[in-house]
Image 1 (cartoon, rainbow, N blue to C red):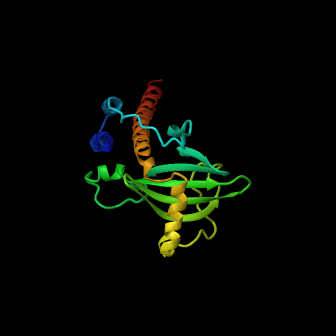
Image 2 (image 1 turned 135 degrees about the vertical axis):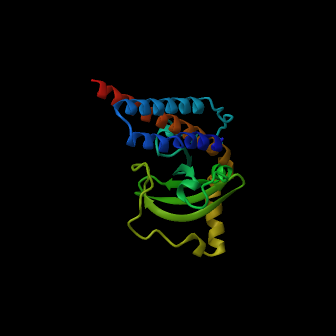
Image 3 (image 1 turned 45 degrees about the horizontal axis):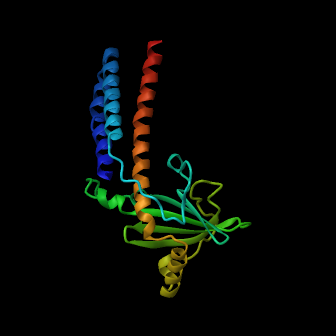
Length: 229
């Protein structure tokens, strides 16, 4: 499924250099032809993505609820309470955080099977939250770091720290690392989240790609309309 989205993007991108070359030697009539070609390509790719079969519907573990409107924001995807704590789960692909290596498309499946979580744990009356940054896989969860940060709720995005946030997780001794893993897993943050979050990201990527094709097409169409007035 991830590879299908990648192919849709690459297919459109491959046509752009030809359009750019045509523009450099186009007359006014040529500009209109190039715009028409691009608009048709955008429509075709929008339709291709729209026809993709969505993944089977998957529900998150029963202790978590899906945040309304999460597909259209950069905020949390899942929430739950644990005693007095409010736990919020933010997710993206690990490949969106760590870029590099070969870009030949061979790692599409690995990309969808490696998720990156921001797990925010907050308590009433406290300005700072306990933030776990984790890698999530189909069969495991690994902690990258643990820090105290300003509450993410009011920001909607990860806040860049302005003060010391703690030692590197790998610098902690094994007993403390194991205890922190137990702490987060006790709150339901483990590999059981993977099936839902994987499917959720696919739907979000699909929606974002369709929106991009549509908005670029709208911009070009409006520009053409303005030329004709």
